[in-house]
Image (cartoon, rainbow, N blue to C red):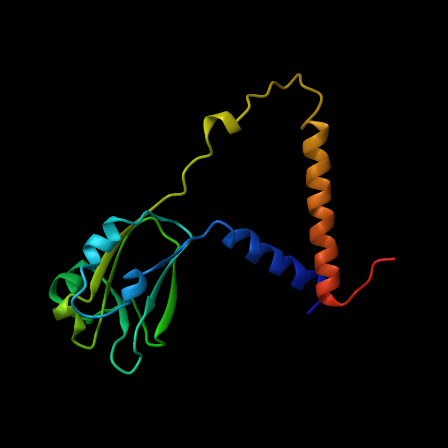
Length: 167
């Protein structure tokens, strides 16, 4: 693979995950029976691109993504996904409600959680500056300088990472 393509893929991966939050289900209690995951979920705000992660004993539990019926009835029939590593990171890439359950019987003991994923919030209005077509400069000199410095830093990092030197 061409090194420049590899660098661009790395840069794209970093750019898309910079603002993502990893929501660890149950916080320090993990994915275990007898925990109120509804209360936990209600104290979280999930945005598209965030992760939900499950930590549990992989020999005892698992995670299934199911529909609302599967969630309500604790059934894995027609599951949309399953994870069994004990440290599962699942990207929440759609703005929708997700339903997760434990498929080894834990669901009947409270091991289920439903989360609503919201679209990313818009930038604050103060960050949006109205612009007229008659303006000559696309950005103030300081902002252009910062973007140039940032671009050069990424280029240097990419070349260093790939073992190349620009002369």
